[in-house]
Structure formats: C-alpha cells, structure tokens
Length: 67
Ligand SMILES: [Zn+2]
Image (cartoon, rainbow, N blue to C red; front, side):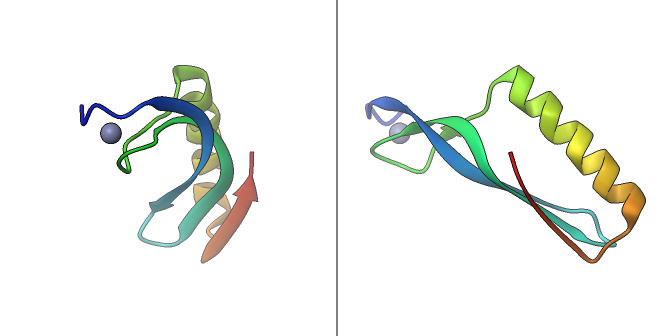
C-alpha cells in the first residue's frame, strides 16, 4: 500500500494468449489515486475469464471488447 486513496474507476484488461491478444476496455475496477494499483472484484474477474475463454476459441489475432 502506498497510502493513496482507493477510488472506483475503470481499467483496460489485456491478456496475451500466444495465438492472439484479447483487450477488454472499460472494466470496472478500484484504482489507487497515487499509484497504478488496481483491484478487480471476483464477479468482474469471472466475466473476464468467460470473455477470454470465448476469445481463445475464436482464435482471432486481436479481439477488442468492452465490458
Ligand atoms: Zn497506491
């Protein structure tokens, strides 16, 4: 902890699957106003997992989505 305030905000989540890159924009997250730390809650993490799994099956080189 850097001592900064946590604020509700949004982040961009990206994962490199090897075959392709998945980018999910506008992911709700708690962000620190002092540093780059971000926290994603369990429900959102599960949504991201589903999105990544679907993108993996499509085998696109680049998949850009928005939550
Ligand atoms: Zn911080």
